[in-house]
Length: 190
Image (cartoon, rainbow, N blue to C red):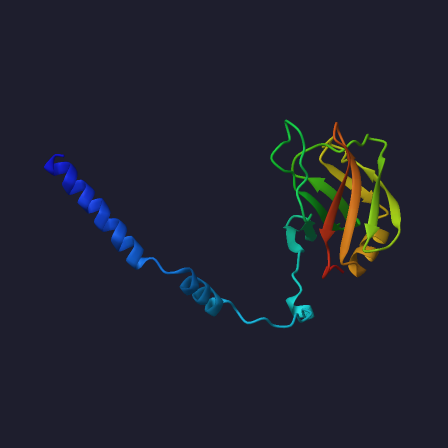
């Protein structure tokens, strides 16, 4: 055996011995992990201040007309998964818009197309554990296919203010009916 090979084997053997001396035993690892675990505590219901707020708010001023448009929106708990060309996840949102004409309720998706014609369609809505209710829906007049206006908006908002969760079922182009669930607790809308 050459001198270089014996020298390399000696270094490898020395590293293996050092590795065995430095590596902690299984009992040391178990004791260390047990000491770093937090103590078990009782679960306490969150106070109203600790409940996560899923609503976002904004307003837009029209300086020319002297009016203000107010907005509130909440995204669904999970994204919808559609086939090409809308792959990669689509985020559904409930949007409230208040202007001089009152409050409008919009349902939209970031990608995809609702199956709803200019004369309208239906969406099915369930607030918390209540009964399934049918709401009429129409797309915007500009032909946008990823937005629906729900009606009656006043009834929807009234129920939305009292709800913690809402599930909406709508039909999508070449995707069939899909359900979207939203955490809606804490809506601040007047």
